[in-house]
Every structure is written in C-alpha cells, then in structure tokens.
Length: 110
Image (cartoon, rainbow, N blue to C red):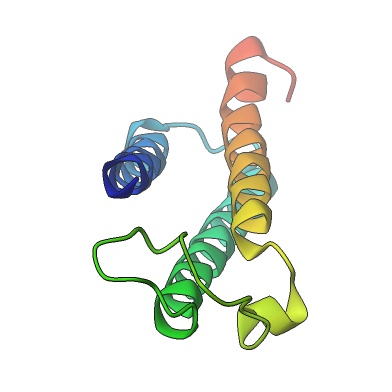
C-alpha cells in the first residue's frame, strides 16, 4: 500500500509540474490563477489528512497509514470526514480549470 501512495503522490507532483512548466499561453489568465490557487489547497488537504492518520490512527507496526486501529475524528478529520477525497476532487478541478485555459486558447475560443 505504501508503494501505491508513493506512486500516486509522485505522479501528482510530476503532473502538476508538467502542467505549470509546459503551459505557454496568457489568453485566459483568470483561469490560470484559479487553477493555481486550487492545486496547492488540494495538496494541503492531502498532506494534512495523511499526517493526521499517521499520528492519531494508532497504526500497527509494519502496516500502512490507512490501516488504523481507531477512528480518527480530530484535526482535519473533525472538520471533514474524507479530506483525502476532497483533495483528489480539488486537484481534479484545479487541473481541469488550469488545463481548460490552455485548451481554449489553443482552439481560439478567447
């Protein structure tokens, strides 16, 4: 399970960097700004959720951070029941908004 988490995190980071580095239009800057704000917020939710499970989940030795022995209901989990799902939704939305601006500029919709 740790390899899945590592691979997912690395692919998310690489994808985000490629989006930012390979984008070369300035025709819809508001979408760029909205996407650039949403993506780091998604990363913060992901990191907070992961650390909350590791610290407060009473994980057995040798198990994944997702195999908790108690229900975590404090910290970020006290506010949002599934912060990692929220992080993936926000990441997807940020990616769509950010990449849509490039697609629209490329197709001449601006």
